[in-house]
Length: 431
Ligand SMILES: [Zn+2]
View 1 (cartoon, rainbow, N blue to C red):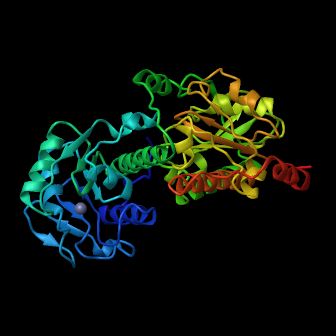
View 2 (cartoon, rainbow, N blue to C red):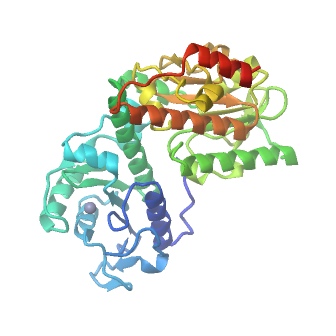
C-alpha cells in the first residue's frame, strides 16, 4: 500500500504524527500507548514516559542508541524493554505500535482473539494474531512473552489483560495494521450487541483480492482542467474528513465524483486513505484510466452506477463501525428511528457479499431516487447522492442512526416511527 512518504521525515516527526492520530481517534489515553522506530544505524526512537500524548512534539521523542546511550529530554517509555525485545527477535520489523485501544482491550480481558474474516481486507493486512500471557508492565518477563509470539512470525499480538502490540516494516505499515485490527474488534463487538455476526470464508476473501483492476486500459494523460482539479481536491477533502470522523480507515474506502457524462474521478487502489493527495486520484474516461494509476477495485461498480442512475453524481463506499454491525449480521437497519434518518435514507437494502464484484449489475440497478444507500454484506456501506458533500452528510446520518440503534440494544426494543407518521414525513419533505 502506498503511504505517506516518510523517506524525508525524521523518525521523531513520524512518531509524533502517528501518536497524535491514534490519540485523536480514541485509540489511546494521554498516558497509555507507545511507539518506536528502529533506524538504519540500529538506534531506536521511542515515545517518552509520562508525557501527554495529546500534545507531544518531535522534541519530546527519545533516542536509545544501539550502544545503550539515551539522548533526549525525558526518560524513554517504561514499556521500552518489550520494543527492544521485538527488534532483537525480528530483524524485519522496523517499527512497533503499542496501545490499549478499547475494543482490542475488550478482547484481551475476555482472552479472545478477533476473527479478521469479518471484513475482506483485514486478513492479509493483520495476518494471524498471537497471544502473549500476562506479566507485569515494563518487565523483562513481559518482553520475553511478547518476543516469543513475534518469534512465531506474528506481526500482531494481543497482550493478555493489557492491550495490543503490532510490528511493521515501517511505522505506517504498523499503524495500518493497528487501525484495521481495532476496526475489526469494534465491528465484531457492535455486531454482537445487536445480533449474530457472520464471517467471510477464505474463498470469499481470495475473490476480493482478485478485484483490483490491474488489467484495465490505461492509455491517456489527463490535461487537468480546473474543474477536474477541483474534483480531485474535493475528493481528498472528503476522504480526510471521513478518516477524521471515524467513517473510513487507512485500508478501506472509495470515493468518486461524476465529471462529464459517465466519466468520473475515483480514489486509487492501495493508497492509505489518510495520506491521499490530489495527484493520486484517477480519472476514468470511457472505461479507461489515466496512465500509471490503478483505480479502486470498486471502479466497475461505480461506473455502472453512473451509467444506470443519471441522478447520482457522487458515491462513497466505506465501512463505518456501527453501520458494519448491520452489514455483518442479518439484523435489519431500520431507519425509522428519527425523522432525519428516514428522510435522508428511506429504506436501506442489503445485498449478499459478491454482488459488488466486477460485472454484477445488482447494486447499480437496485439504487434509485428512493434507494440512495445499500449494504454489501461483510464488505461495506455504499451511499450515493448529487453533490459530494450531500452524499457525505447522508453517510454521517446513516452512521449516527446505526450508532443509536447499537446503543439502544441494551436499553430495550426500538419503537419505530409509525406508517402514518412516515406518510406525514413523505408529504412534508419528499414531494
Ligand atoms: Zn501498555
